[in-house]
Length: 93
Image (cartoon, rainbow, N blue to C red; front, side, top):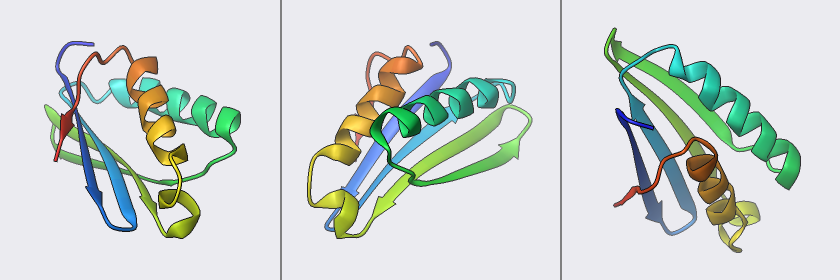
């Protein structure tokens, strides 16, 4: 998917996927994809949406606490979201 940047930030007990995109209409695709992955993996992370301008939008998927970060499930969730949206690469922070 062009004009979409995926960034992953990891710290002890915390992991976040941030998607930066230019078209606000892309939020619908993101929400549908996240809902599918939530249903498949039975995981429900915190999801935040932010608009900085008409051409700069963000969606963040955040995992915190031992329930998510002590195993590899949140990484699988992030991989499925990123690949489900057609994003080939992401930036790791």
